Length: 89
Image 1 (cartoon, rainbow, N blue to C red):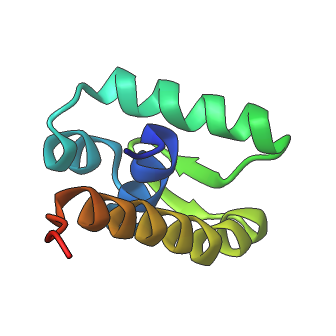
Image 2 (tube, rainbow, N blue to C red):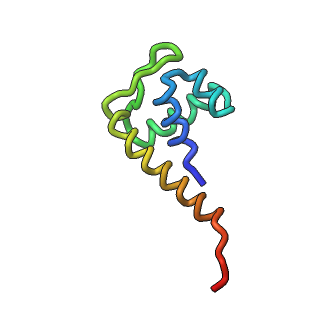
Image 3 (spheres, helix red, strand yellow):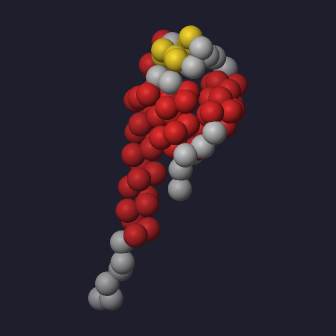
């Protein structure tokens, strides 16, 4: 369980490069661009300033990053619960 757009956003914020983000996630560079564009449309603001394939976070991107990381962390916790085996009482 995850939100692919937030995962791509988080990875791009780490890499600051579209090509490296695509390679790290095992997706195409156009897919990275598509996910970021969809998230920017949802937020209603640019999250990155683009310099070719390199980027820097905008103020809104900086504000979203810790929230995105919390959400991704919550998804990871859900996956841990799903993997946990209940023991009979």
